[in-house]
Amino acid sequence: MDILTDNELLRTYIGTLSYNLFGTLAIEIPLALALGVRGRKNAWTVFEVNVLTNPIVVTILFLLVRTQLCMPAVRGILFLMECVVVPAEGMLYKRRLTETPMNPFKLSLILNAVSYGTGVILELISVL
View (cartoon, rainbow, N blue to C red):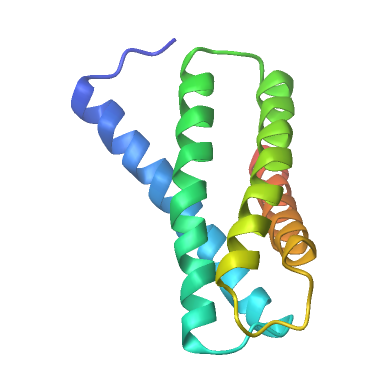
């Protein structure tokens, strides 16, 4: 394990958190609009839901990676966390979205599957 100062670790964490959150927002908000989510309030709801859930997932993953847990285990844990996030976000969408032609749980599944899949592809590209 490489030795990082507290400041370097904090910068790494903030960078990781920012990269993942902004990437997720850049994917999920336009996709939600393309899938029929309409109105500023509803787009804002997609933003809020991701600002609530994404940092929790990223923080857990960051801590797992820092413990040098093997990457297949980290990926498995991420998949399990997504299995919790999808219905949680679906419930939030069900309560908050006013204009969407799609079931909120299906919307959550599609949004998360695309952003998760994009992350997997980006990780594979960076390894090559």
